[in-house]
Length: 149
Image 1 (cartoon, one colour):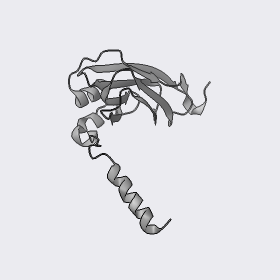
Image 2: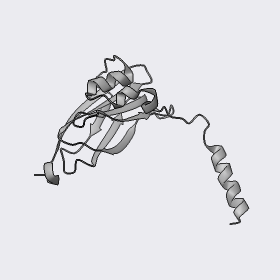
Image 3: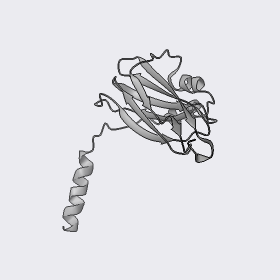
């Protein structure tokens, strides 16, 4: 392919990216969230004083994580969300990640890996497009020394 055609196609592809595609920089907008040592404090710093329903979200984690440095966490929603926040209670700072959900996404099905220094629990908070907040909490064990037994 000729260089000019290739560059022209690249510019055309960039022009097709939606202009409204953006994400909130939660570290800049809500800095106290990232220094909170307790999950409840981090949630309050991020969303204010909320009363989340214990429905609409699910977390999938292994029963025992053999490697605390790379724990797979699956996150799903049954409701349409504006944002999704992940917290844990075994490290000094509780906030792990906050995702801005695009308006056209009807249900979330995300997966990430997190670090946990010891056994504890993971909390997921979803901010619904309906103005409600949703919550799920799951405990998991982290094997010491990298062994599962």
